[in-house]
Image (cartoon, rainbow over all chains, first blue to last red; front, side, top):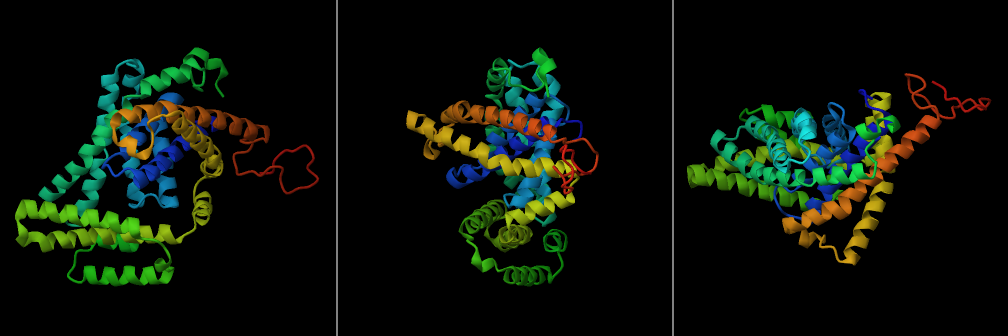
Amino acid sequence: MFGFTLQESLFLGFCSLLILSTKILLRLHLKVPGHSMFFLILFLMLAALCVRKPWSATVAAIMAGLLGMFTGSGKLGPLGIVSYMLPALVIDFCMPFLERGRKNLLAFACVGLVAAGARAPVSLFSEWMIGMDVQVLLMSAAIKTAGGMIFGALGALPVPALLTKLEARGLLPNNPKNSGTAA
Amino acid sequence: MILALGAMLWHGPWSLSVLTVGIATLALAVGAHRHSWERLVLVFIWQVVLIMALYALRYGVQRLPDGALVAYRLILLVLPGVLLMKTTHHGDMARLLVRILPAKVGFVLSTCVFFFPTLWSVTVQTYESQVLRGARILPRELINPVNMGTLVRVICLPAIVTSLALAKDIALAAHCRWYGLHPARTVWPGPNTTNTNGEPRA
């Protein structure tokens, strides 16, 4: 599927379901704006850095959007897919830098921050289309995005440690150290 | 979809009335009253309060009706999709998904949905064990961002490990059943009962 093996596709699918389920669970229990970005960025980065193929995060995000649309957790319909895709595209574009600077927590936090902020155009577009005043629109988007960006940066911070642990256990399917054993 | 697009694109003088009547008819037709709407109402109230507060802050009280209209239009934009999702069974949605998408994408998504309860039950067991161990990962403790690190360490890492292992096992099982042998959709062992060697039919 799109150059991914079945094992990689299934892993990306599980990541997308983990994104959706943590989002639904946290919406039930934790009333903090933007908190869902924590797990969205965490699982998208893990998906990208575990599979290590171009567009891994985007594929996981499209799957999450599709599953969200068809299972009722997404309210914006097709725009929901775009709202997952934009952060994933940022992560995919930054993948080479992240792979090179695996110990650089600041780089991870910056990518998490930008990726979470990349979701703002969806909210801006939908609210602009319904005729909201531009200044109010910008303030509303800023309030919604600021919390998400903070949580996005926090969500990116544990990724290097998690990858190190996964690599130490030889669990990464496309690990260059044991590339012969990949499925 | 048409109603949501109408709320987004049609700004004529009768647009709100027509859209309200349309969405109310849709809600009656699909039996929306049989479902719980408390959580969604809370989300809508938060949305209306935020938009009206921003309008009041920026333009004063005289522009509040404009804010209310925009908030109402936003609700009309979201409502048709929510109605569809609330009143359609998840299984029907999944079947539709598999029918629309290419065979391999449909297989991956439906397999993930089918096996997700296995992954989730392992994650829930891990969560409960960690709570019993004294990990600070109860919902009220997660408001403190420091405890999110603990959650990632003790729940997300095992969840990722389990999903990697599960994906490997499922892929192996599918390849053992000749998955990917033909470019078209295949079934295993196939409807032909005389097929004894287990090769799937395209």
